[in-house]
Amino acid sequence: MLGGLEEVHEADIELSRVFLTNILHDQGSPCTRAVDCGAGIGRVTRHLLLPLFTSVDLVEQCQKYIEAAQMYVNSPKAGTYFSMGLQDFTPEPALYDAIWVQWVLPYLPDEDLVDFLKRAKAGLTESGVVFVKENIQEKGFFLHKDDYSVTRSERMYQRLFARAGLRVIGKTTQTGFPEDLYPVKLWALRPN
Image (tube, rainbow, N blue to C red):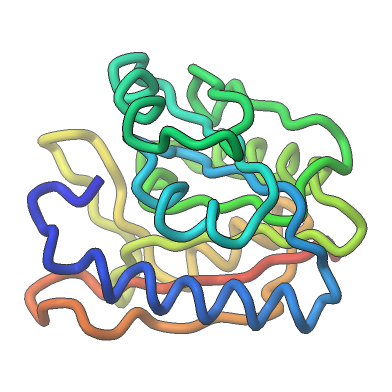
């Protein structure tokens, strides 16, 4: 979901597709099963993950969005729709070639974020990758009082990844977005 900024959709999906396919190719990972964490109505599932994977699961805590995603995604390649927050999601061990997490981690406190990433790490196949795409700021963090989300710095995210036992194997910065938006960083993570 883009919060009324539909003009960023194409640039978002294109950069993500190139980055994801390059990383998975480098890792020798098959594109069998993925999960979209914080899926919203399924925009990333439909436009990024379904064209690349045999099966895609969706995790979204808002039941209204799950119902909208079922209609919007509308594909036999859509697997399980998990109606829960990431703080409660535990993937089956060694199930996913890709775990995609986009624009949802700001809603998790640091401890819940680290715990989620530890569980996600256990859900990866041998060559699987966790992908995280989030807004960042230059230093420290900013608490948004309207929705209690937190925009973290790149350095803060990298510390949290390390605490979860994940290392950065690739990263890029989103291009093609309006200049008045927060910068967006995309990381590929593998277990240490």
